[in-house]
Image (cartoon, rainbow, N blue to C red; front, side, top):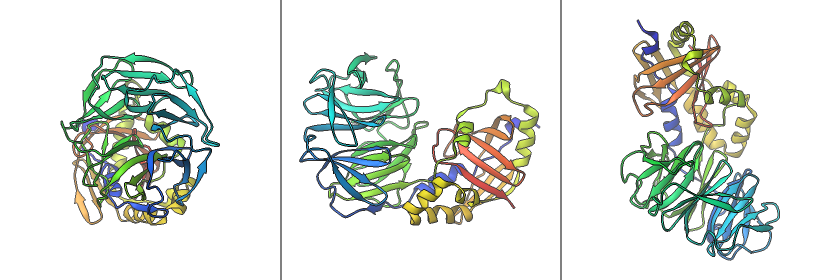
Length: 408
């Protein structure tokens, strides 16, 4: 028997979708964001610009806010995070770097250079913009210098989003594309026209989120790009989406602020590093891969003990106890049975699977796998054996999506 081809699934691949699908939670007072024209998350705060030109910093956990600086921002067209600063592109086409502490700003580059910008995103410290003529530009924000990237293929861009390794664009016809930021080459992700009617969009936790005209919130990983419902309820009128860390926030046209997604806390840095490094085949130990595969077999239950010891988890728990309780109740109620035929997972009284996966490699106490079927076909994950009875499962690229299990 070829252990590397054994058919197994990670319950985690299904849990993420189950936990994310829930209703938005209103934050702060209704109507407090009624005049918002732009929003961006930075350093744990949500920054918004009002039509009158005032810049506000909101504590998203409490919904409390304060004005920052003078009301100099009435001409804002795009507001973006950039390191420890904000970037503001005005309708006039001028680019400004903004100090989020006092609202002071300085112009970068020539006045009017971004006058025709129709979409903008920041990725790896570079500002990417799309012009009305379809050209994609890369700008060094501190200097204001820019260069065109690739061919002018982007005139129909509605939203531009910065992911980990690529840009993503949602076009006016609803098609999602992934763009190589180095040469401007692009390819479709998901079905043609799948995101038609998107009213607001944001990248959060390495995933793509967008609201539809009927108020539904959808999510997709960059690959394969197929969208799914991210919230159990619809909220018509959402016009702004912004990520603050791995928390997504939504603002409606009535001025209401919502916590649109309260995901599980981020994995600890050492676990994320392990997950991010896809182990090359030449460094793998086939015998160890087989041993860890068999070690993974058996019956498992969700385990929240390790999460409870994590300071980041406690912060989430204090900020949104209802959402965290739903997560922990779901995890404690999970059951997973692993056999050579795969893994059968029970979540919230619903049994799914088995789904196959291929054991790609193993090193130390970690088994690297790739899902071969099901809702996350092609996604790689790490199964980390903390001891004989406890495992941690982390999806590569899925910040904040570590799950823990204990053997029955």
